[in-house]
Structures are given as structure tokens and as C-alpha cells.
Length: 170
Image (cartoon, rainbow, N blue to C red):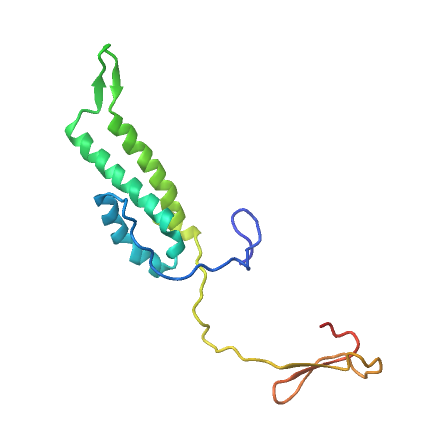
């Protein structure tokens, strides 16, 4: 597969972050910590999260914690409030809940937390291939000799590739 949704070429030189499970940040509230512990091992095993992704996972979990808090507050307070001047306005908790859901959706897409998001992300496979790599010796001969009979690489019986001729590039 070549390219991506934006028709840009794959970055084959993308740096690989170190593997491992990020620690849960201390500042997360109780609900956010519970969400962290529910997700972190699964996301690490999927290859979506590494130790360098701590902040994005923490941001998602904090949004989740705030959303839960706002939803709980809305169960005990009315959705619409009347101001001192007689105007009706929506509960601030509804605004908070809606904003946190919006932010959660963005983080869910980044972390592959919905079926649609998972179908669009790819992970780098750093597991060894089924076949072990073989080391091939390449010997460049005749680079300084202008009189060579063949510029065609020759594979010897021991697996050595011999390239002869003046056109060999080092």
C-alpha cells in the first residue's frame, strides 16, 4: 500500500518511540484514572500507545473524567435555569458535558477508540519476520581497472555477490 488518505507518501524513516506502558499522571481525577487503567494495557498491546503518548492518553482520560462529572451533576440539577433577570439558559453542566464529548471524540480518533478510527490507523510492525534475515557479502572488484569483461553482478555459490567493472558505485 502506498500513500495515505491525504495522498502523501509514507514516511519510511519515521522514528520509532520506545516501547512500554506510560505511567498514569498524578493530576487525573478519580474517574479519569479509572479510564486510564481500563485502556492503557489494551492500547499498548495494540501498538497504538507507547511511553511517549502519555499526554494524549491523559488528555483523553481527563476529558472523560470531566464528562462523567458533568453528567452526574446534570442528574441532580435542571437542564434549564432561570436567571435573576428572568431569562432561561441551559445549565453550565450541559455546556461542559458537550465540550468534553467533542474533545473526547478528537482524542478517540487519534487513539483508535472507535471502530471507524481503528479502521483508519496503522501501526508499525516491529516484530521479526517469519524468515530470519541473511547477511549477504558484497565484494566490489575491478573498480580501478578500466579493462573488465563484465559489468553484470555475479552470485557465487557461497552467496557472495561480486560486482565488477568501472561503473560500480560505492
